[in-house]
Image (cartoon, rainbow, N blue to C red; front, side):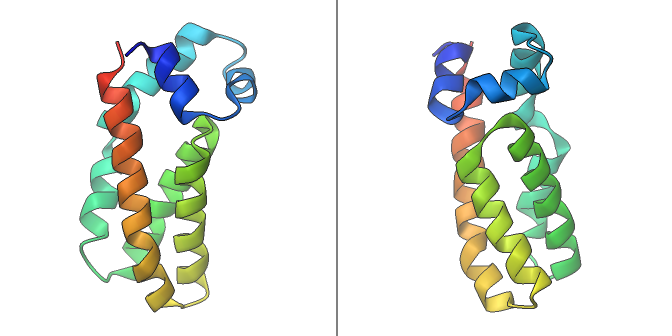
Length: 116
């Protein structure tokens, strides 16, 4: 799979994302390829194995911002739901949303890891 195919698969509005990268396609592609190795990915995996809600909030909120910048809408929405639940102290709701965050994060990382 090419990085262009990965972008088409993961980013519903690639033109908007490209604007955030000053129209520089190579710059965007470079950052996308690095996404699966970002320390935030492992931090989210680790934190979601606990019930340390402050830590989960911090890591998932960071992932929310990153996924929003890259235009990963499904991942962004999953993160947003967990962040909102934690902020509302709806920990049961957060527990229900965490598997969605983890699954979508793995999907995004898997697609990007296969991109050439």
